[in-house]
Image (cartoon, rainbow, N blue to C red):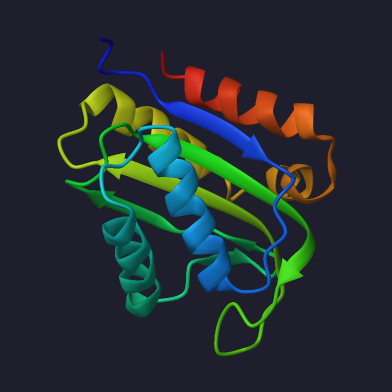
Length: 151
């Protein structure tokens, strides 16, 4: 089994009405894909991360990210919504794109570098526009290629 593999997924078919619904769906997806070993722990970890400070990186995009012993396989999962999650934060922000970064606790430095490259790219306004406005395949290819830049 390769230890430097990152699970990458673009999800465009979810309909959620709240951050709670979204986090539950993510935990279910992560369980089904053997990314985590405990549904409740991921759900709780995501909410605890939100309490530390807003995960908004743009007025319409959030970056929930955690590192946990309950994560078995690191993952980058982008959820693109047609209808936004309303009231993401105290400013009642509407979020259309959510980039989940799930990192296993004892991840290799190689994988951590790849994940940092993806996160760093988010400071580029062209990348934000791509995430909000482009076709699904373009988004998936961007994440895959950015992750591979450090390979």
